[in-house]
Image 1 (spheres, rainbow, N blue to C red):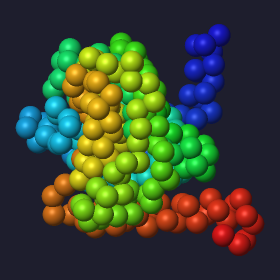
Image 2 (cartoon, rainbow, N blue to C red):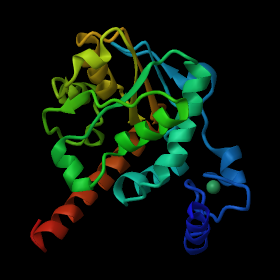
Image 3 (cartoon, protein in one colour):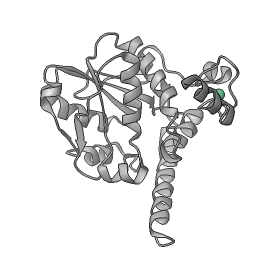
Image 4 (cartoon, helix red, strand yellow):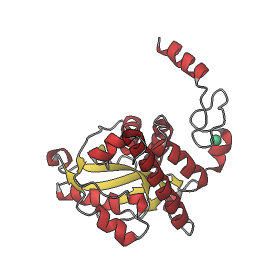
Length: 249
Ligand SMILES: [Zn+2]
């Protein structure tokens, strides 16, 4: 039955590359051959980042054109199915850089209000796939207690840090006590969200906190890319409000 369902779904919605949207050939999954070869992958030390309260943060991709446009479709245009492909890339990255080092998977959650607006929590979906792939338990351990401005709306490191500070709380300290926790988030920029979440997990007794994100934004073009995501997020929120309130956002 499941195979029939999968076959019908493939017929109705032929699988496309999550990055460039070309139709996939038989035997290809998630990515087309071209993207498999040309994605801005991070390897070795470039994939790793040391941040306050975190033992290590790793990311398989650089936040550049193809990755950014694909990610926008995931985050702002309801392409939740991309979580599968993204989560598999992230799990491979964890296996490569942090083999056997994590005991449970958690994520940096949206505020309840933002989750209602969006309909899903994009980091939670990624965490589900990562946990599945690594065969680790998935635990909800954090709560966003303060509705902050979209982090992608703030390009200054200081502003982002202040925005994240005190915004999260560990909801279940016994779950993380003496454990090595893998925190999942979507994109890492200055790392202030990941650091703040790790801070709360460590304060609740976690032995170590690691982080994996789909992509890392850094380098000279970073400011422009972040700015563009800000505009997307603002436009998205504006349209969301418009659809709820009619023509008066
Ligand atoms: Zn492609």
